[in-house]
Length: 355
Image (cartoon, rainbow, N blue to C red):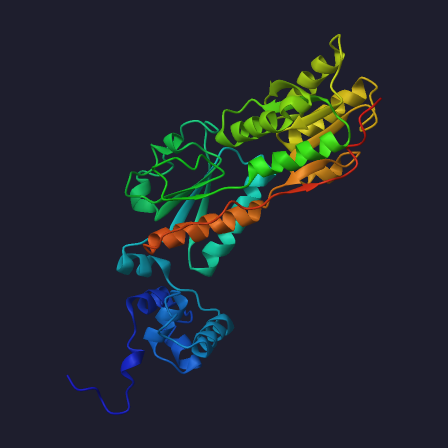
């Protein structure tokens, strides 16, 4: 069929445009964006679908993005999902919402997802690091992939199946079900803590360890024991990840007869806050009588007094790389990346070992 004179074959409304105009609601369409940018709707689709590289110039892509922003254009996700057979949705599974670390992971993942037209659903596992339940009638039908932070791969068996891509964050890198892994240099973090305390003369060290059964905490414990080795006496006490439980466990240690530790290495800043509280309750000074270190560098680390020496974990970067890894897997590309570096932040909670 011939095209009528004067018409533009690139301006034929797409299904997404028709949906945009339903029920008398007037919203900018991809055709409007194409007109404003002076390009075809196909070009708009390529740019806003992030598939333009090698097919559209950088300048043209910029024009399309600028036009879409100016017009306030939002693609109709329902129509696009029907066309592509994709939900453009990722599920981020975390052990808990009460820990600031996971909120930061979500922030990083959502940032990268938004740049690629994806959404991220945050799901705290009802059983913590234990088996997670499928939050949907069928995760396979509702999601394009799963990102799991500080979880074991077997804990995710109920979510999706082998066909649903899984990216593991801060988790066992030998888990074969995962299509990609993003990890932090946890052992190196413990190396920095250990060298710092040994240089301050500490030779009696307590490890206030998390009672959570998790790969990330196991790695910290193994690294600390190996690094202290013959250099210092090491004792380990476990506590749930709350200030109150850490306070109770630490008070029992400090009040017991015999030589008390001169330094406490905590698996988490929350545990470290409880340790500091216990020391003060018993009349001990931090760091003059007892040095305390944490892990994570949460906001809590600078809220306590004295401020906490702790290992900074780039949580947002973990989320960013996790989402980037999932996008790579969905595109059929391999994902490899070195462990993300961590840094010891020395503050006032550590000092010279008491004589």
